[in-house]
Image 1: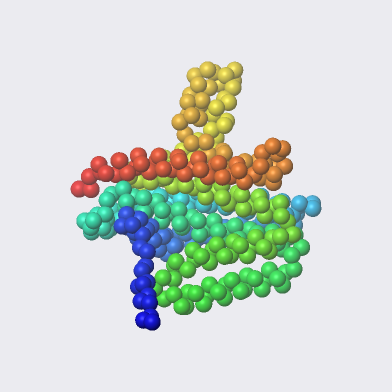
Image 2: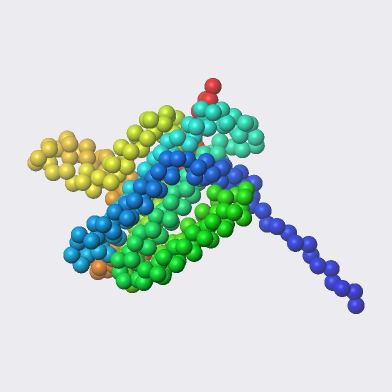
Length: 326
């Protein structure tokens, strides 16, 4: 019998729109990772992790709590800082160096370019959050009785894997950090097994931080579509502060500050995004609040962030489409 002819192997390629957005996103990520500012923020985050160990030694039987709380708080703060800086400078740098003109002269729509820039910022923040959360969990493992030799061996092994991958991937070294950061986060999760509650707090805080950054980066993209880097960073930072204070704004006492201020606070609380949702109380993240499970809440907050960020990106694309680069 004649041998059956084998069907040729076909590679499934992404749709052209997704391919163009992915190309812009990866290029944005490559430029962001090589920036000195990002390296400085990452070094500051690691220094904060080490500082949490020092503060933990001053506490009385609350070492794990101090490490987890300081780590989660710094992770949220630094990730927002990175989102504001990248969101306010990435697009302007392209305009300043005139590199946007040959890009937009190709068959690529303006909204695709804008979404790609946003996706590259989110990818950068995701890698940062993964590595920082893994570092916090590693410190947590040391404070909760995990054998130091196991922690040291795991860290050295991951660094060796990273070094080998960087040597092998000569043309795509910066992209090695994406899968490596996720793997490092899993390793940190396993090492922090002696403290299941605290590592749940760190992981939930990490997901909420990325969700909050999705809104902050979208706000920065909106302002960057028509404004300068300074005004973009200033307006985004102001909205971030207002968003974190939305609950306070909605409950301004009338007797102390008057009805006009109280009404204005309620209006602001409805206009700005409620970012206080992404920094819930410690007891909530530990699952100690009856009738309110942690992960359904985190999932709902993440979906809310996706919807809000999508609305902001649609508005940004509409504005950027009308912008004159002359």
